[in-house]
Image (tube, rainbow, N blue to C red; front, side):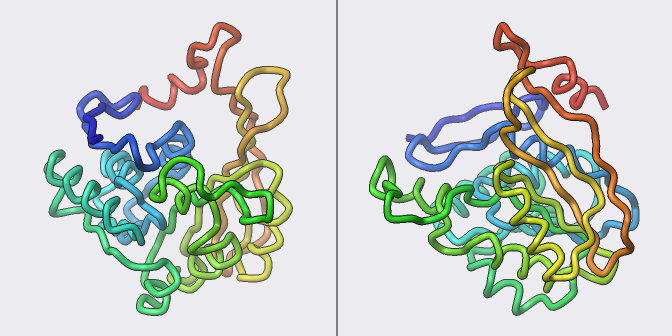
Length: 240
């Protein structure tokens, strides 16, 4: 069933979602706000854009041309509706294509790649029939895995271009290994915690293609207070 929501922190941005498909979470918003935009960023691609929530948000901070890449036809249809709904047809476009195939067509064309990828590996114990057939590929590495995502990001970036990803904290070392393999120098790292005293849930990382060494470890971001409300640090993200 299709429903209409506003995006957390952006009352002027509306978004159609489908209850049978993957719906955006705080992870997408945090990734969109993790990147700092400048006039040097003129071309952006969002890998696995789903309903285009990340392109919608970053359109508030950049005039760059934004392409959302999505393999699911149904998600692309929603994304196109959301772009029209928010009158962003001149800035954002959606391509219904596999990320790996897209990267082969756009060798070193982009200044920035963002990705909120499927978090879970496909293993024997994976319950891939649970819920919707449209939801499973958005959560599990069926169409593409983490290494292929990083490799594709490296392929489409210009030298000095930036790749930013949000992922499960337990896969942090794996991400760093792939960054090194595909010539991405980590620049900013931030661990995300659901509440104070809990283990890190997710991690935000960005890196520069063929960049110099030097990493900034940002302060931990705690997303919720003990009472379940969003923390002041999360609410601060929406002040600018």
